[in-house]
Amino acid sequence: MKIIYPDYICIIEKTSTEWRIKQPQKLFWRAPNNTLPLYREKREEAYGLDTKDLILPLFRKFVGKLGFYIVNMRERQYYYCGLTWQDVQEKLWEIGITQRG
Image (cartoon, rainbow, N blue to C red; front, side, top):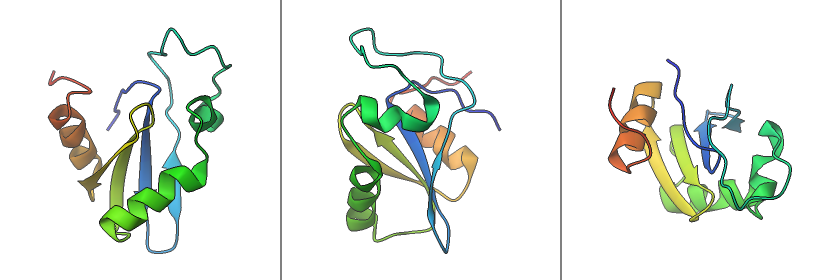
């Protein structure tokens, strides 16, 4: 499943052994006031965050549940999605990031 989302959204997967930040295949939108160069693997730095700033709040809020999470890096909002990519898509729809096709 291919999910398209703006640069300020970060999708993270928690497995039984690690947290993985999912890198988008293609970014389709970038905030016009964001003057830092944007590299897919360093997007969090453009929002003044590092990996610790993404993972620790998720762990504290959701106790490290397995599955997928969404972080709105611009607004510092953290969401648990579920165990599948479809759950990620549903959560994006729910919080108004994307629209149903």
